[in-house]
Length: 325
Image 1 (spheres, rainbow, N blue to C red):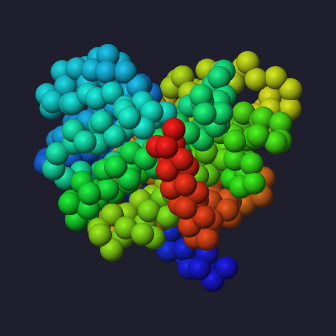
Image 2: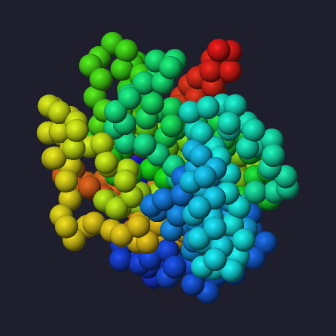
């Protein structure tokens, strides 16, 4: 409790707000020479994040599951900004794809933005029988981060941005049954636990790597219907739909992709976050603990150091198991 009170009394605030756009946040920032990777950069807030960073002079590499998708958006951003944006294929469900990308990376990496994600896909399980949302949203990004660790360490002041969601408020990690092998599969709670994992991973990475100049923070981009992330939600029946409906927000809270990318860009670039890690940001400011009945702030389980440590070890075990098969 004392640590939580300390965090609340020292929350980072900025001149920006929920209405700010990524371009507004990046305006006047010179990112020349900075090497940045954005996963899920071919659409939605990922594309807007990549565009704002490239426009500020960064050397951006955006990834997507297919090179065709990544290259098309990279070409558009290059044409719009005059700054060459690199495209790469990274399938976050495939360790071979992740490792191939990391092996081809040369030099330092200043910012890694783990932005890609899926929500309630029609095929809920991987060929291994694992929950596909946990695999894509958390395990794949964890594997990519581990593979790029040396490049991040070479920066000396690297940042990892973990794109989470207020959906994490709906569920802690189902520690005893992460892949819903014994309890009935609930796609929304599976998504929620993957977003909790995104936040805990930022805490764990900072705990272990801050001495190497690597810090990580989590962000909630907001509710952005125009990204395609929620395209499968309407098909979800029964209790899950009821939970999803109860989590709806007012129209005033809905953001554009440009606004949704703003907090990510802020956390990736702001001088206010130098050396800062293990925190949760939304609406271009650091968030405090969630208040019951509200959709803002972080859940008590989301920034818990012991839970972060537990997730770190569980993640390593999963990835080791995946490499054996």
